[in-house]
Length: 297
Image (cartoon, rainbow, N blue to C red):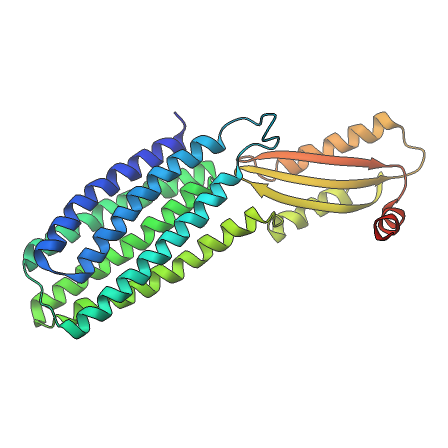
């Protein structure tokens, strides 16, 4: 079993434990912040289970139907996860505002503080583990999962602080205010997650720094006079590069092919964690103007 699959199992198990603890104390105490956190943990459990499925599918080899593999399912998972985070944030915001008007009080304060302290520690340990896996595998699903649980660490810490304040001051409105702050942060954190997933689904290019490094690699080859039609994209853990390389006149096909292989090796070394599929078209002259005119016609 791959490390990223193990990570989704660990996150699912942790989410299931947090659901049981938070839901129980949330119902007993009447804390809108804890109850909202419990609902968020239910969503965490669903998302982590879905992430396992997404990673399993993304790791499948390309076939006759999916010639480029199923790597984009990871981006789809990130968009779904970001949407779920947004919905949970909106719900938390609604419940917090509702509590301001209903003025409900919190009971079982001491038990609630203990449960949220345990939740905070467990979630923090999970985030550290997921960040380790994300750094080692460069997997987008694990990165999104780590971001998701990172927001949980902050929300759990904020809830813990609010419970302590309610316990010491007796002001139950602190619970509602903290719920509003948490909801806004959760919605904000989901934006980047959704954006990154959508960019990959729409075949956005690799980041500017990587594209610039690819361009420099090509420009440093003295036998290449120019290049055009450079296109890049990402799918799952695979980087795709298409480019037309214009060689100096008179170069042999064998020599041009050797230079093309050398360029591909240098590009591949830019990211040794991921996979690369590079399609370099060898041009004996610059045909970009002719091709552009034909496309317009």
